[in-house]
Image 1 (cartoon, rainbow, N blue to C red):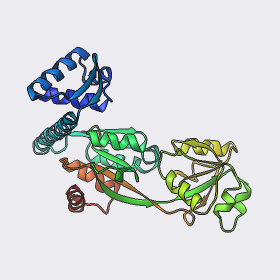
Image 2 (image 1 turned 90 degrees about the vertical axis):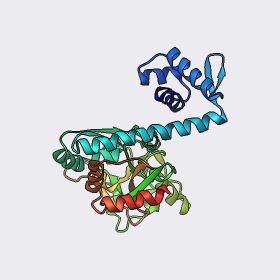
Image 3 (image 1 turned 60 degrees about the horizontal axis):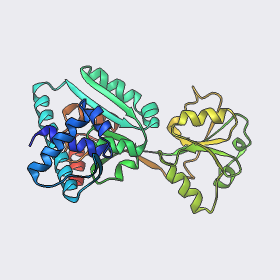
Image 4 (image 1 turned 60 degrees about the vertical axis):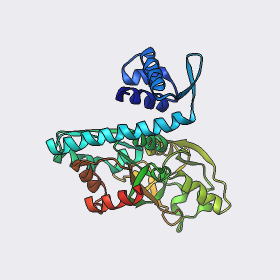
Length: 309
């Protein structure tokens, strides 16, 4: 049994049984992957994948268990490497963060600047995607940290560190009639076309549930995956926007106005998701503390260990 074989089966499972994608990711050939997987199956005495001709069309029951154990073994191997790196050189390494547009655009820049100043030799990578993709990257080990709202709590594979709470605002063009409202209400908002986050993105369920709870059906005419697109269409007069309060900067967003809507919607919590039982190097703890100053190494370990049991 070889570690390479374990990587092969995990990569094939990760790419939904697509051998071409798995081969490209591993910089090898499809026949090479097939040959090594067959050799592993013969050694173990069970089929891992269900085949139709040369194609993989499913995963057997023992195959699912083998893949799970293989993922755990590869994760432990990475932990061993991280421990060695931590003690050989504490300021060298890699940190990969998966996050949403709102976090990458508005919350992370000052944190990343601070982190780079302290750890100039750490290679920092930031990947932007949907909450589901972010969680998948963290679970698979492609990302060390997943930063998102609500989504990190949707899987049992990640420990979730609550970082901060935020709420929403309503965006309008200048001189919009809604700006005359003395106490903004959901009913007033529903009088206008609405532009907000895509259903799969940050905080949209809260918006949807709030209107439904009051028996209201907002006219959502456009959804987007990032706040900058929403702001652009508000500027064009396409509708009013509902976005995270942090996405509005009066110094930059001079062509739109914002109205506080925190009294209308429940607040949301942004958290950091960490793969359970993963080893975190010192600079990872520091990054988390920079993003959420109330979290120190002791409190991080306490939360991760508690959720990991």
